[in-house]
Length: 331
Ligand SMILES: [Zn+2]
Image 1 (cartoon, protein in one colour):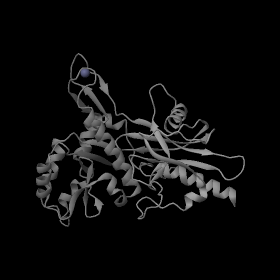
Image 2: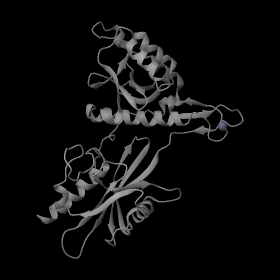
Image 3: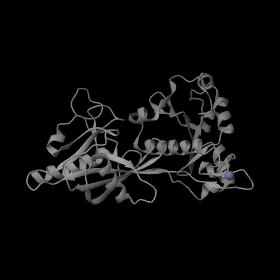
Image 4: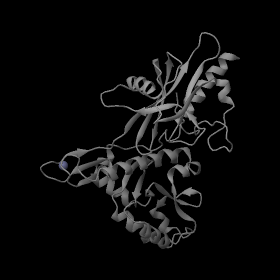
């Protein structure tokens, strides 16, 4: 199945061999065709309603409205740029400015002297991005998060140095020299269904404390060390809802850069109906038929009625796929 979920279908070639060539990388960093995205504390830089992509050859273009080019090129020179990949021969880089405090970043923006340029929170900016931009920026955000959390060696506590365009960090302690690589946290997300002897199938959706009231979604949880994905699904469903499941089937996956997860989606068959909720995690949980779910509102809709998760999420994909199948069966 072709994955059309947000953050999937990365359009860039990650060029994972080329990025190890420091001469090639350096050439791309200063190349006038390279693309640069700017990040500051969970936000990317936007111009009007579009993500701001800096290309050095803008400097030679009299029609552009960037009057203070040095303000940009200086930070590109001073930063450990993160290489994201190539499209055709053009390299794409992310520049993390999070070390600047609020005062300094405000001054930097002022110095750019560009109308309507501002940082926008990544999650809030999703509606402004194309599908391809969403995938590129989610990749950038996850790498930046890892860079920020791997400043020091986890073995000896010495400084780490960023290499390979930000895809590896190496401990600077000559007695250690441990290599560190970007981390992704696997999380399972599962729609639990129950097929009664008679009547329509049911699916279990829950209100989580971490999401707004009346928003019903699937169960989810992180994979424990030493656990298979199927075991994680079985354990999480029992811990959160007291339901035993079998027939755990993989459906799809989605990178989830908040901050660095991979959501792995399943549908599982419930063996029992009686719920025993983990109250620390869930506000409520209920069984619903597909027909009932068709009356739910969308995320972001006004009103007090029950809502489904955001359209871009794998939770919503699992619910939509299940409903589609159930409704087709009843026709
Ligand atoms: Zn070390």
